[in-house]
Image 1 (cartoon, helix red, strand yellow):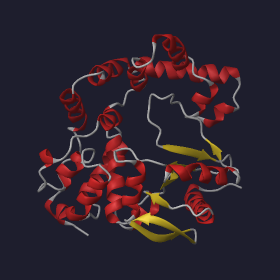
Image 2 (image 1 turned 180 degrees about the vertical axis):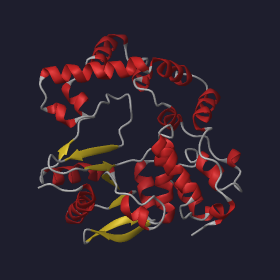
Image 3 (image 1 turned 45 degrees about the vertical axis):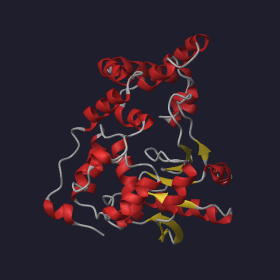
Image 4 (image 1 turned 90 degrees about the vertical axis):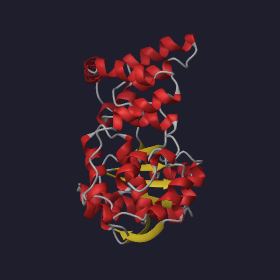
Length: 323
């Protein structure tokens, strides 16, 4: 079966929610076509399916999808980077399914954050099957956090610019309670400052240290270098070795074909990975200096430097749109 991406994504979403209904799991579809349909996301074919549910349900959904041929995608992380989702792939499908049990930027207890978002659900349909998507307020929160998490990427800058200039926008009186309930006000400060200039952002909470690391680090290996300092000395040599000579599974997190590759292909992938790290040496060092153990004010300054070039304020007409 050769599926096109624009067919595969809605079918994968429909399959996921079919299993959720069968297992009595409450789940929300994040981003994707439903967000485009209500004007919060640019109209484009999503690359995967993102669902959010409670952590206690993630294993059950994963096992149900594994029973239909989906496999867990390997990860590179060893505690150095917080895990917020499980990614599944299928050898014959061109899209992944990301099962989120938390969402970066929402610093509240994941269960409480999910329940707050659950109140923003709206039912729609994909591939003829009902799915739980988010309303404009919930979708805006998710889209803004997603864009700001890797604002160094051009695609994320475009997403933020769309939110500020072209997207339908919730009332601040709707967004503020949701952002407060999910403890995402600090992470959203750059978006709020530009999208809601009437708000005194100085009165908003500071972004958490965890968010500052997520949003401020873009160079490869920096998370590992920071994590290394927290390891006992006896564990450091093995950790460094695995970073320099990663396993087949770690390499396959970015290229799933390496799970079946021969040794020559693995060593080629290792050399390329090491070259990318060396080529980014200056950025790695600068970001390590910024985010090594330091004061809260120093971390906030480092984050502000990384987000100061976000898109400009939208024009007056765009700023005036509200749902």
